[in-house]
Image 1 (cartoon, rainbow, N blue to C red):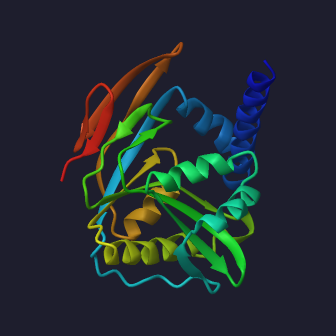
Image 2 (cartoon, helix red, strand yellow):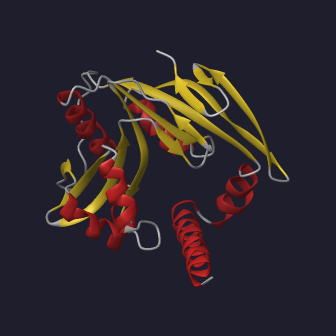
Length: 226
């Protein structure tokens, strides 16, 4: 019983942490009048880009170093995002072969981005995203609040794409919630193309899915057609 209560408390703390960060980023009005209603009709935009696209890297306002996380970096990720990560979860991701890219300003860790390179269960869609052998998918990204708005996200994305290309990955796929227009426009400036959309209408806990464009879905899996 104690483990159940601890698990429930951890889940609640994670949700509170996410909500607080979203309010900080987008403001109370957008959070309550756009994001909360969106929860009942969750529409996600799917985007894709070739990792070989010769885009010139936009310069950030601060020096930024991008590299791949090692296992010894994982405790630092947990400290950076308390209530969000647990060390066993992060080790499990690495065991599955997924990649974590880190952005550092000097010695300070300021950006995290997880990239999935094997098929993976996406919790917010409750489906497995099916990835091809040379395909990568951005699962999540986080920038320390005081460094937002400094060009970190765009510069990091370019450098990460360059590293993925050197590792043999040819296509980069990502998904954003439809309400986050600023991040979608930022992705499009970095040459991502909209390839489809999908999501579900949530009625009293019953999910009715919908898919458009190149998004292919069956009962348990989704993929993006070439």
